[in-house]
Image 1 (cartoon, rainbow, N blue to C red):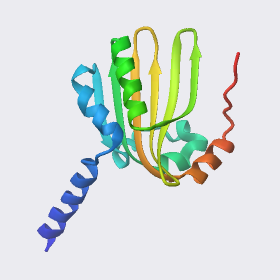
Image 2 (tube, helix red, strand yellow):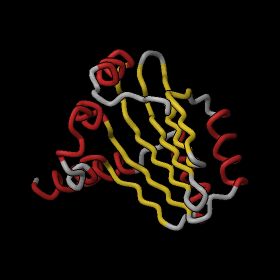
Image 3 (tube, helix red, strand yellow):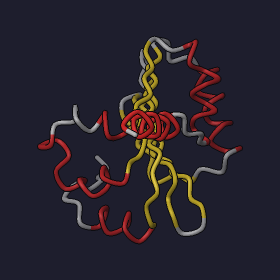
Image 4 (cartoon, rainbow, N blue to C red):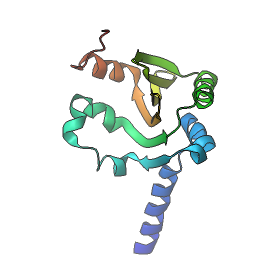
Length: 157
């Protein structure tokens, strides 16, 4: 009985780790070009995220199921075009975009009905290109409350 339970628990964990998502396809296609990439279920990654850094976004991080991070050492324009094409094809919506001193930060989300399924953050500078994908299931109204209650505001200089 104990072995059956252990096998079932292991199967559940492995199934959750093998989750497929829209960002997952970009991750798999471009993983070989990365300088560094990591994919982790949230219950493991959240152990390493300092609680004081999460702050007012704690409710958002509780909804994340899986993290995928890709770091490219070469911020080539062809890779950027490939990413932008991926975003348009998968119908991600832009939350915000900031372009300052040649550095560009963009935040996208993928919505299904009234739930946000994925959030993707792209950070691009002259030398680096970083993409972070968060798989989640959060109601749009809950996401809007978190953003509205945030002390951080986007300002233009």
